[in-house]
Image 1 (cartoon, rainbow, N blue to C red):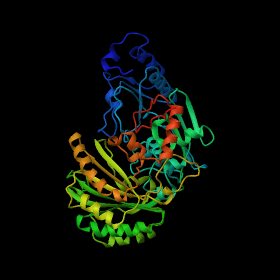
Image 2: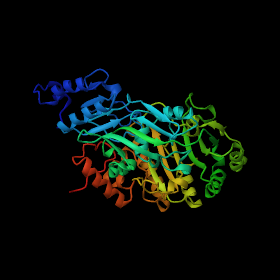
Image 3: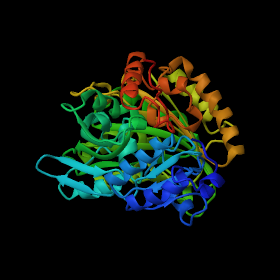
Image 4: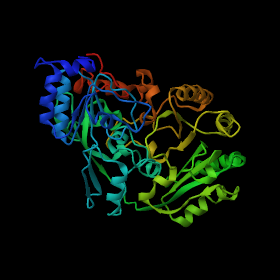
Length: 475
């Protein structure tokens, strides 16, 4: 049922949800809140403020039993369910639904002998980085270590430091615990409910509420990495050297670049304030000496506005991309590229480079390939492994900025269409991509149809649809 907030607060029939909320609150350890309750705003706020959440009910889950109670309540009242940990990947409004906030579920266990981790649903990557580092190990974390582990991993998980060496984060998941639409707590792995296990690793939150993940860790404790920031006059020679490097790069080296138009704000590095800059990101797992040799050609092009590339502990990888930490409204778009020839670079520079009138804070190209292009030992739903690069753009702001952003970046992606694969990484699809046609581009056609069949088996009513939804197949 789709009750208004007023109806939820005035119903008195014991069979109606407003009365049952009291019973739900007695079952769970965390808070159960509606829009008029104190604490509701804090419980529903996501990192990406451009996708505000106003569910009819929010449950702050403290464990598996809380999640089960919330899902069963939603099933009784025909409410769609959304899930949030940090909210970096918020793509759909939860209005009229039930939101489960998992941020209280913060358990982490490291099994150093097995090089494995078990994390609960609310854990962020920096917590795992720190815990694993104590044993000389590292997870396949992304560029922003304050992102939630579960959402990132279920969407594939592209590590800009380890991905080309080890593959996607989803490739290294060994078990998943989740509550499905029937309220049952399940454990899926290669031997137990293997079809569900396949779908979860790449199909994101379409099949239930994940309460815990188990995954392998890598024997990595340090790297040679950081950022080279160049001024506008060096764009063309830097990108020419970038293309030369990536054409022959070992899998242990990952390079990306970003066009930045940073505002004149005092908390930003002074050399980057209020100007265009080209940020080349470097992550190399080999020795510092070899890393220095590999990027010597970039450094020889000219002086850098900033140069932070150096030996670093793996726990400091946030400094490579230097993504924003504090919540803000962000509008984003991602497209995969099969190649990046000189002609494509020229188009990108013309439309997004220093001379372009582009109302976009960041346009980046990430290098793929290496182990990212290899199917894992235990197959999963992560698709489009043939892409060699991923184009991604992001800018902060409200609705007016969003309209300008999508118009401008639409021109860029349209011009790059000759080199696009037609596919996308699910984690790089955003709120504006919330249509079945665009979600389907994250998968090969056969994979998408197989996901729909799994969806029909575990969520035939499409309870978990407040996401990049994969609708159940027709019976």
